[in-house]
Image (cartoon, rainbow, N blue to C red; front, side):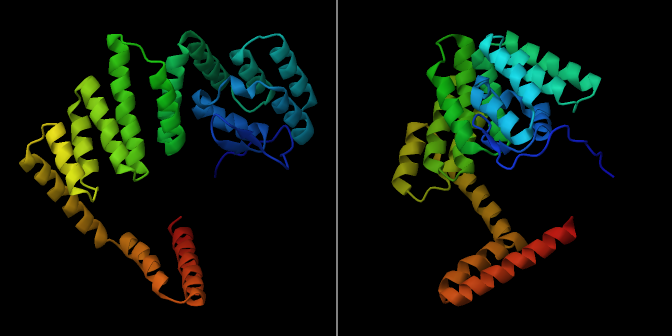
Length: 276
């Protein structure tokens, strides 16, 4: 049986939207649960009177709201703001409090650039690809010409290419991977660029890409063959058949399609519940 957490404050009727994390929260406990593994996704934007008003109005946390207002007015910093929430929530054990305090201290000693890079990588991990791309682009605007920044910029371009590929924006993915290879000369970047290019239905673009990156035609053909074999394996899978079944609904009347889609969704729900 899982552990139960007693809530110190009531649950909000209206959530607070964490802009930096792209997520709604409904309680202090939910915020603490989020902070435990995602503290880098928060930033100073949470330090505003609107958040304090929400705590008081929605959660009845008047005392905490007042403490946070005083921290904001006294310009005491992001770490103290977060620690006040963490300690007043009664959510964490002593060891967890100490660990989070050390994390916040580490963030204090890292540059804003380093913290934002970690945040962007976390957004990727959470599959918030568009938010990650925006964060990566902001980082690239502040990169310098130092060797360390050039290496990090190469990693950023590679990760941004992966984000675009996950969103099926393959031409943008190819461009990002190319830039990554140009900066850091990582073999996996040019391999990823070839894989993304295989999904483009544009022979002229592909030919230009091969020539531009000095890729041997037989190497690209081998990559295409590998991608094709993976696609064939996917097409015989049960999951692909489910998706193909939905595509076939477009050939039915609107009433038939709606009825069949509802039936299919209910079937998936039953399968999911049974799997759990």
